[in-house]
Image (tube, chains in turn brown, red):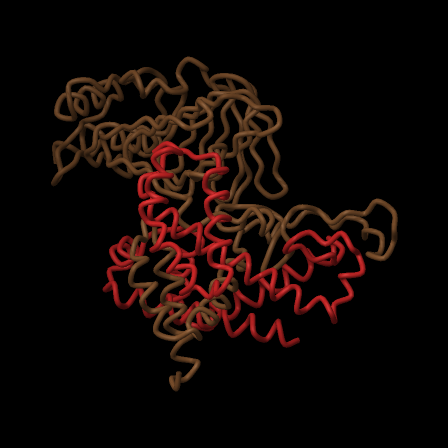
Length: 321
Length: 171
């Protein structure tokens, strides 16, 4: 009881931080700490609520154009405050960390990560019948209490979504929101690049002021900080990686190398001299990295050279030096 | 895990959960809150639940946080003009939305500034943890620093955020 409040606050903050860790499970120790002093629960409440109220969605910067002021609160016309969360610490946009409406707040542990190592694949069946196929080197956050939401942190995933008019499936990645409208679509997040390709139905890409509707056969590529570009894609090729093929129409070698790494589980890089070259065609992935990478090199017209644990794709003349 | 499975875990840990609710400050309401906890988890659209007991604890914890919010709100209501609206939705201020956007921007700007004042690394560590949801262990690897250095950075950043909020609440 005599301990200074600041110490208790620091301890409470440490618990708040620990509980944000994916897979936090040490509730027993937390309970023991709470039982030391009734003050602990009070301070913890204040710290945890402050943490929940921090809304760091980058969308705060591109807040929607100011709407006309709503009628004054005393007005007895039909004004109802939006169900969206108040500005607490940030924006109107909901995200994994900013949930719409306190009443809908999810337990911290309701979200969980599904992660694959490079070369590993995994399928996740969701409660609503939707399915997500994860390619290698992928990390995806899902929400136990909301099967219509996923956040792709990195890597590649194919979303085959059961459409529900009243509850669109939402994928967040790279600060953008993808909303399905009856759909199968593939999403890649690598470094600062987001790529979306649609093989069925329609997806809506939404990032700040940019809003792009992507029907079947369209793809979009967005580099953080610049405008998204849309183009055409072969719907049948969108998720060919699941069948052990990579299909390209004018893709940079750097992209091909990233895809090979993710699919084969070994680091594959394109040497600076060939990174920007473009490739159209099909690369087969079977036979393991030792066969697939040299074969890919042959298709790309470059040499594949072993370097450490991985491979480097380089112009033929460079390889001989 | 199915609802049936979750129920079994709930029943097996009933006393512990009750103790947890009490430790969280539930007092005499602990039994009622335990009931509410069950309604909440059994009514949730459950996907697979890997760690049912942790899930129950986390839900109980959030139940208490929600309760804390409504108590705080009720206390404020006496002096708060927004009560006049009568239609106040839990946790939602009735300040018109355009104004809220501006307030939100201003707060975020100040939060960014407070973070930046801590130095580059603590700010970056905080972002990775709090915004990107990356684990502390991964952050330590990414930045090439020890786990305890990550903890210290996070503690520092959280402390700064708390102080900022305190100023907001006072002002």
